[in-house]
Length: 417
Image (tube, rainbow, N blue to C red):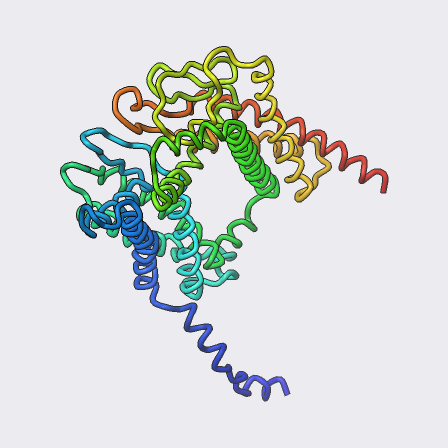
């Protein structure tokens, strides 16, 4: 019977199974390259459309030409990739991180689809587990990046002029960074390789990564709440700024949209302020919980959130306690998801998670600033290095204490059972 069963033909595959198999075995070179081009084009087209809409909203198309509006949209897209531009001979190097987040979201989504399409290439999970090398994700990421970078360079060459002079090397660097870090991760997740790799990681590393993620997201949420609260307290100033700009309804909508593109930047400024070092809004200025030194400010609604110049209130220095509290909450949430009763495990998870979150915040803060205008406005940025050091210390201490506290609690729960 065994011999006869071996002669039986395998069960016929349905058309759905065949189509699913083919869908996961599409040509890797074509899918990955076109995926990179498509990821760039997806957000570029949106920026071009917004540029044309904004042109009509501002003066109903009375001045300029559609190509000027398209060029403006393309330059905005390049600025999201760190290219910077020149306006009337003045360098504007700040990166609108809100637009960069939209670009990253598109890279993730399309990278995930590319990964799903090529998941049938290379060895399966069992063969990978046996040690067989798998070049599917690195190869796809490289081709995906190539398509994205070529699109970025072509866009910079077509949209850039001698007057605007966007930096092609900076745009290329950011394109590579985003494609590899975000698009490559999406490809790894979509292809199933990320799940295989994560399964190999020690539980301590996975738990520490979870703590770092919760801590960083929690701190960004706290920073955003403080920013919006400060803006709400002095909302009349922001409204007064808008009224003095004499903008119409359409122009106000466009201006609000442009303001939203730098809201993540302002959130990172707020986080640096809460950590203690603060930030600068022009050469010779300082905004921190200990002192506020300001000069003439441009008419920009978000600046209404700035505290008044002079000595800080007595309660302001106590804001630095928010950082270890945010880290403690992040460590608690992580240890609930990955419980442990070992003291060393609890301490390492909380400490490592806090330190990694602090380093990540410092890197993000370094991307938040830049030149926004001539003269003194050439220096508008958080004190990223100082903020990074403070964040590492505060998040590390909060995570360590919370990790030990949660370990003690989970040990008690185990003994009670």
